[in-house]
Image (cartoon, rainbow, N blue to C red; front, side, top):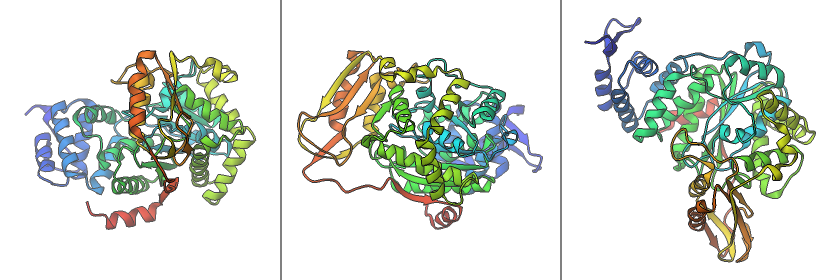
Length: 465
């Protein structure tokens, strides 16, 4: 037997074999922490062949991971590489993570809002994935902005600004890099246990004291079944709490794009407008959700007794300009040119622009947000394959929100594309994704449910999987 095929655990006398682990999971067995650690070590080092890792992922997807397996996988992945320690920051380190959405630009608001209220925000973010936009792609619309910092540079920006938004370093959670690349290619992405371990391993490797999770529900969520979204939220809270990180999860609506802009540069512009104290009605859901999330971060960070008091503190930082000052300081500290925000319309240079008009009169009843995300991607704002460049100027600005009453011929959205050739398919997607009705639709709450440690544990005890 080759050395890479087995390992003798320091806590177990029996050697481990990858083929035995695959068979056990294939047949519905529950893996122990030593078996999970073996899989993760093999993924990080490359000692386990990719075909065996892919087979294990499919077995785990088909048979699900138990709560205990998910916890063991999360911790083993967290410990698979280098970790960041926020100890020298002298503040409580709190982050926010969203499970992905269309027009979801809350990170640009909540990071400086929480920092302005005395919380350190070490935020490790990602790129566009499928129909959802990527925080890093949006920030890289700013000329010169560097997302790939070393951990020392990351700490330096945090010490100076209180917040930093960066990409995952090559040495941080290497097991997740290997496993996620395989999940994307083997159809094993949409699984609560695997999603939980992937997200939390990176967040816990950042040494967080507390974490706020924004778990999306509705037509734009990765997990469109509300029961799956609930289970994922509870699972992530319980797993992070068991690892010693205070965590709360909010189930929030993704039945329409968040705010009015979906793209890269245009999302940054919308966020900065709010930080300049402006309050356009089409951005009200973005403003309120950002304040709610920041309020929880400020509370968990020890700077407010309740999330409601945290909300009030965040709103003050939004209105007095302190959040905008920190945001611009962070951009400059990471090499970005903040002068582009002096004339955001002048900097915006899409290859082609077209206004889509309402094709009938009535109330805007439903939006297939996943489809709208694909429309944004195909305008040039996203990528078909990993590593492809994205167009910072492509995207959609929506002029009507769900529930609005519109007349036929009224401007519904403005499409910005890389070229005129990129417009036809997104326009057709738009027509299929938006439904009108003769009566107004029922209102949908922005925040549908909140899981804390106790409610998450109770939910999991009663969950039937």
